[in-house]
Length: 114
Length: 114
Image (tube, rainbow over all chains, first blue to last red; front, side, top):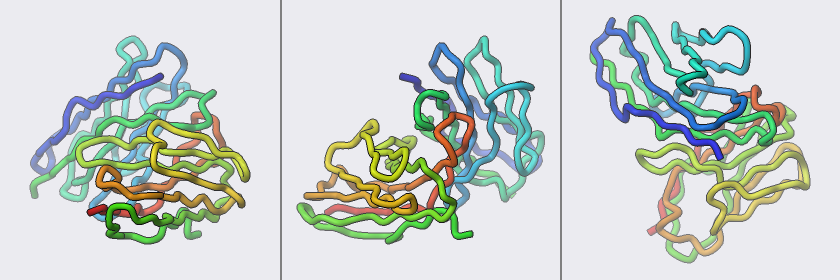
């Protein structure tokens, strides 16, 4: 079974700082990778996804993530965060033969100070 | 489009009571899922369904039951509620079971069992 590890449980940044959230997964085969975001009081929504092709994927609101297969990593980045990026971020992985069942990391709470 | 709709938003149960969490989606998705999210932890899969009439257990199914009589609805039943079931419950749907199809989430149900 696959597993997902997010190393940062809580990150606090000032506006305009750069962001990188770590995500590592364990599975030896082909995976699909996602970052979801949960803004305060809202439901989880897709930030970006990778399933093939260019390992650098761009998502909404200026976020991007890079898939590094050799490191089993899919780190999320943003060059300059805004106060509105305050949210909880979840990394998730699934495999094509698993009925779309996703395995989630424990989440990272990002607080951006104005 | 309403997307994925969950009711109720909040509920307090006494130990031993039962209840049904409702979930409906209007996107004609075949795949539906129930996750629970405990504080500081990621989402854990309770049950999932690949189509009407077909359900299967996820990672943490004990104490829950589901049914899927229609494509739209996927209710989650709690029998004999226990404090360990205090959690936030998310229903999600997916266009297809291939891993590249992201999950669409409802707003969640916050359940407290006392």
